[in-house]
Image (cartoon, rainbow, N blue to C red; front, side, top):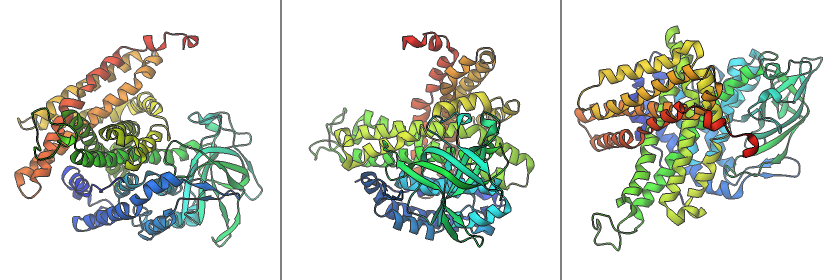
Length: 596
């Protein structure tokens, strides 16, 4: 059976020593996570994930969700009890406004808890994750009446939320959607249509499900500019806010999926269901993007989470499984064979996973912190810079962490050899679960196009220039001999990213296919530089801890070694990405369609 241990010490190192969150005590909520409070909160979250949620992971995979004859859906054994414990602990609303029943802590804390949840049980974590996206959309775009009606119950966790975009004939191209909305005399709308791939669309965990549905009002303009967002409750509310009649929205079927079996992925049928406009008419995509951006960071978190739990199990197995002898002679002569951990190629896989996970977590938490600054800082310039960062890094985090998370799950499976292919050890489930994260909430190729086509040129390239400046400044200020093995490779990789950026600026406007053909390589190149920057910051913090002495020397020394591995074995891939980008689109686009 798989194991999981929440990386609490690693998270504390990032928060306290790398990100220095104590500097942000002037922001709302940050004063409530002083060191004496922070560690117990993380400890309680870890306990819930390790002892309650993780043991249900294989059970959920084997049982899956079941659709009943009346259209209701039951979750696997143990899920309802575990969800109640999650709700009773107040975890759904830890970052929600206090005036609405939340705890008001930074969004950073929700990101941390969500990583632990997804490592423990990715299917389970999706139920609260989608609800948190719905909360964010209603907070930003809902009317005062809608906030009062829906947010307290969503934040409490007694109600859950969904997002309904995809239809059978359209996924990414939402301008093609056909679900229609007809306005009624009382100001409500009748929603009719079919949505597919709706995660947590129907289940038995909560008393009500609040669907956020993208639809087209009769007579609306064609394309994406004619879409509007609606709140469509599973159960309608009475005037006093209590639950009333069942709405005309049902689960038509459950999708049979490769992974995440314990999350109910539904075909949702809207048969004249009552819906309520949220935001403005024909501006639905703007409101929906609030949920999509939250979801994209959440999916990046899932990629990291599966990579972490897969690594933990692979490392434990490699230290225990006896197989062959070390190339340099027996390391455990008293045993019949040496453990797998002595073999360089096994270590190559483990070190790659570890180096990716530690830097990926740093990148994720750095970006989550920027989200808090963008929402909570009184300084307009700080808010703008943080918002620029979020916009630029969101597609990178979503794609980079999910691509890497899947690759690392496969590598962890490889460490197990034949046992990795057997369900008992859990590795094959990690591979299956991780695969969807590269697809949903915008396939990773779409993330790359978003980065190259929208985020780079936005505001005259202001966000990208700020990123270049920050990394260059760090390199310049940390050029001593101790940091040279880290900042010198980062400087070379940053140079590759700058060359790639200039090449795209010069060659993509006249030939857009050059941007399309190079977009994924550009995102991967950017992601590697961002991870490299995170490694330099972690190494610098670890060196400070070593100089200060104390009991963290072994952990800090391991940071230096893992960072060096990243610089020597992973970061050099930026050169290959640059070469592919500069090759252009000619050979990619030359063959006629009939040749395929």
